Length: 78
Image 1 (cartoon, one colour):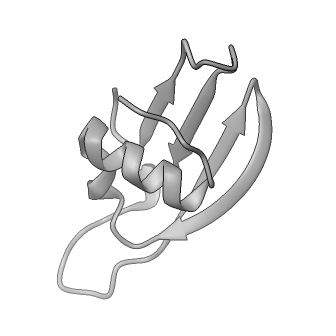
Image 2: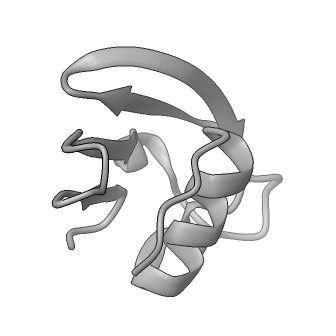
């Protein structure tokens, strides 16, 4: 797992899922954080996109899995 990127393979349906957020533009600080764009893909095909002002939540696999299930409407497990 790297910052802003998570993937789930070996899923029961044999599909590869990825959640990637453009954390390059994220700069935490006293100013209001700018939203970063996140993209949900399944087998390389872009599905849903969403924005978040807190991409730090993607730092752990547990929280990334929770966000992916909520935002991408998946049902992945660790």
